[in-house]
Amino acid sequence: MDRGFILLGRLTRAHALLLTCTCAVIVLFNAPSRPGVFPSFTWSNSSATNEAEVDSVLQQAAEDALGERDGSIIVMDAQTGRVRAAVNIEAAYAQAMMPGSSIKPFTTLAALRAGLVSEDSRTTCPGRFTGLSFSLPCVHADHLPPFTPAQAIAYSCNYYFATLGQRLGRDNLTETLRQFGFGQASGLAESEAAGVIKPCESGDTTRVRSASVAQASQQADCAAREAIGESDRVQVTPIQLLTAYTALLNGGHLFQPQTRSADDFHFVERSQVSISADERRIVANGMAGAIRYGTARSARLDSLPLTILGKTGTAQPPKGFRTNGWFVGFAGPPDASREMQPTDVQLAVIVFLPRAHGAQAAEVSRPVFEAYANEIRHRDTEAASISNDQNAAKDSNIAPSPNLPVSRSSIKVHLVTENVTRELALEDYVLGVMRAEGTMETEPEALKALAISIRTFSLKNVGRHSKDGYDFCSTTHC
Image (cartoon, rainbow, N blue to C red; front, side, top):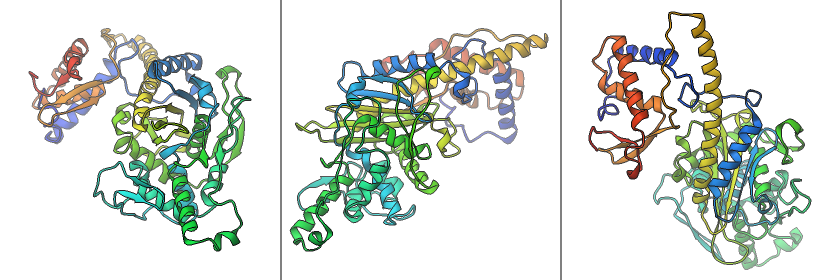
C-alpha cells in the first residue's frame, strides 16, 4: 500500500490506459445504490435540491461549529442575498467594528482603479511597516519574493497595504467602500448599525496643502491604518462585510440580505457595482491563495470537494486588547481547472469571533462548507443511483452492485516517508493503492476485483488510526 503514491508516475502507457478504463467501468457498474459513497461529483442547481433541508443542515452545522463561543456565523446565497443559516444573527448587525485585514481586497480594488498597481506589479516586503505613530509587523514568512497584488492578499502583507494606503490619497478608498454598502445599513433589520466610513482629513484641500510635515505624516498614518482595517474611521458589521464581499465576487450585485425561506423569497438588488473582469480576477486569485497557501491555510478548506475563496482578518476591538477574528469565504463548483466565475459563486459564509484570530475564524467555517459539500453530494448520488437503477432494470445482463456501507467524505492518509497527512476522496485513495498493487496486472477482471477489495477494506477499516489523526498510513504497518 505504501508504494501507491511513489509509483504514481511510473505506469507504462498501456497500464495507465488499462487502469483508467477499468476505473471508469468500476464507477459505472459498481457504484452502490445508497447515497453518500462518492460517484463523480456534479454541481446541482437549487432547483434540483430541497432548499429547506439544505438550510436545516447548514443551520445545524453552523450552530455546532460556533458551539459555546461568542460571535456569529451567517450563511448566505451569494446569487440572491437569501440568508440560509444564522447563529447569533443580532451580533451580525447590531455593532460595527474594525474589520482588520478583511478590508484588504477592497484596498486592492481601490488601488487598481487608481492605477497604483497592476496585475504584474511587484512590491518587496521588508517584514514590517513603520509609520510616524505606529509600527506593525507582517505575519507571513520573511524573505519571500516580491508580491503581486494577489499574493499580497493571500499573505495579508501589512507593509504592502499600509504603504498602498498612504499612496491612495484622501478619498479613493472611502469612495470604493461606500459603493459596496459600507457606512449604510444593509436592510437586514430595523435596528441595524450603519457602520462608519470617514476619510482621514475632513478639512478643505487648502488646509491640507498648508499643513505641517508632522500633520501630513499623521494623515499618511491615518490612511495606512484605514487601508489595513485598523482605524476607527472604518468600522463595519459582519452582515455589511458579507454582502460587500458577495458583490465583489458575484459580478457586482449588492443584494439586500433577507431571512426568508426559498419558496417565499424574492431578491432585492440594492445596487450594481462596476467591477471589471480583470479587477475581480486579481482579487479572487488572492482569496484563492489565502485558502491554499496564505493566512487561511490551517483550515484546510482546499481539501474539500468545492472551490473555496476566502480572506481572514484580525482586528483590535473597540475596547480591550484581545483581537477579533474575521473570515469571509465562498464556495463554488469543484473545478480547479478554471477560475471561479461570478455565476459559480454559490455559498457565502462569514464567521466573526471575539478574542480570536482570523485563522481561527477560518477553521470554524470548515464544518459549514463540509456540510454543504456533503449535502450536495448526497442529492447528486441519489439522482445518480436512481438513474443507474433505471438503466440496470433495462439490461438484465448487468448484475446490481452490492450495498456497501456509507462512507464519509474523505480518507486521511499519513505518508510515513514525508511525515505529512493528506486528505483524499475515497476513490482517489482506491486509485492510489491500485497504482501500487495492480501496476503489473493486465487482466481487467482482476483489476476490478482488486479495486472492489481495496474499497471494501477501506470502508470497513476507516478510522483505524483515528487516535493518531488519520485513517491509514502509507506503509503496511504504521
